Image 1 (tube, rainbow, N blue to C red):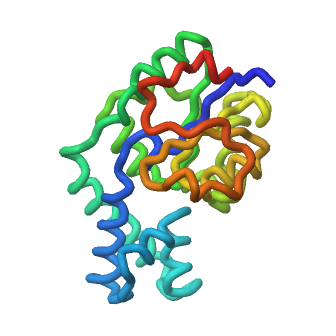
Image 2: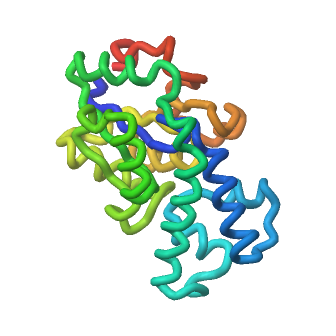
Length: 218
């Protein structure tokens, strides 16, 4: 079916920043909270909302709600301080967004990030104008791989799920797209192609957006 909308995950998909998130989480989890996790253990747990990450590691209800909020914001402050000097779109993405907009393709962001982080990216890079819908962690009850994030993007744009193409960097995000009935393009910033073997909704793998033509994806 002809695609009318492109839905983008944010971290690792639009900006290559996932290593900075791992480092910030490792700092919070190990230095502040004494979790004693290896780098790979932190990386494997680092998906979904911040409160879901904490619940997976420490158990549901281990921290009071106010402390969860404080830990979440502090983790993002540390990430932003470290990453800001490197903040830029993945190679070729700005041109890709402009070309898609010219073709009349609707664009949205569907991310497990809190608005504080989404605003950090969109406003520092001055790209908010491209996106007709933004769905953050605060807008969903259950994050990826549940399909709610991407289904809300489609609903806000007024297009059918089958008319959406998702851009993702993580297996859980591709699974969310699959659960929403959407095809996906995978950018291999943090995960290798072999880690996506379980999913049959992948249209292609890319390293960046430089050679990608939005017209060919329709």
